[in-house]
Length: 365
Image 1 (tube, rainbow, N blue to C red):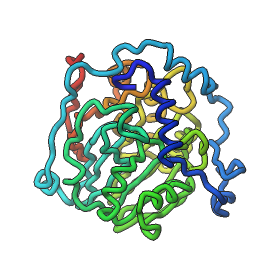
Image 2 (cartoon, rainbow, N blue to C red):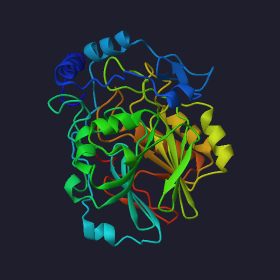
Image 3 (cartoon, helix red, strand yellow):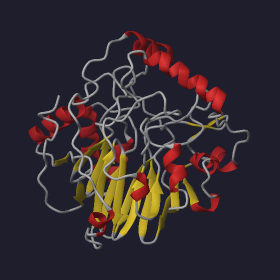
Image 4 (spheres, helix red, strand yellow):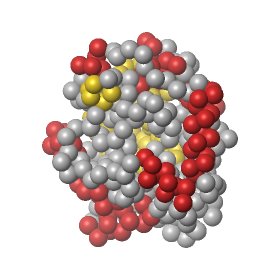
């Protein structure tokens, strides 16, 4: 974890903080809709789709023992990460007839979809953690402060992990967001953070919905969920398909490589752009995060036009260097003639518009 050489000790402190501050949110009764889901695994829990090719993950003791004993090198940048600052005037100037994606950091994105603003997995806190005195600390500021976000039409969440669902961000935005779109069970998390239940729509995989002209579908992912030591898999995880006008955007959320990518690609016939997880991978947990080579294969399975890599360059969550995800994906893309997008933090990408991709990290330490 960032700036700490004893991650296991920090983890224990965070677990203790959960016990003393009431961050546990275990469910007391199983919602009938959750029990009826094809993803239900009994005892109010969810499971991944069958995947005989899934690589085995080490047990939690081995993973945390490694965090305690292993020395990390190059996982945190020495040089400042470049950030393009934004303000309301710059956002308002974006073409209201187009679809724009603004990189906020990690997997957090601000979208301007035909003039209306949406958020994906917004995390504005300094740390991806249940407490702000310990845990992975961000490498860079956000391109605009949380208080300066415009009114948000819709907010999409992929799952409930701390680097995707941030309490302080949700609590600040709860009066500024019209609708929330989340996987099964995550609605209870939001309600506990002060979000009105009637603004939340929960999705199982393949459920359809939408708001104000934007069409949405939750799709499978291969991951897990939980915010404490006691609530693993009590909420569902998902990837998302967003259709705005004639353009289709895919967001992978967190996921390992699995047959669902081909299924999604066949079902939709391709995407204009795919925001694909590329970071926090490791041989100790190969089934829940993709290696860069798998990210590229998943992109090809989806039949997308542009590979936009996310889940990197903001938090120290694994043992690979902070540059490794970007270096490996862009090397593969160059060899295979794949159009790749590695935008700077705060950069605006307009879907379908020509752009020159810059390898902004190459000269940074």
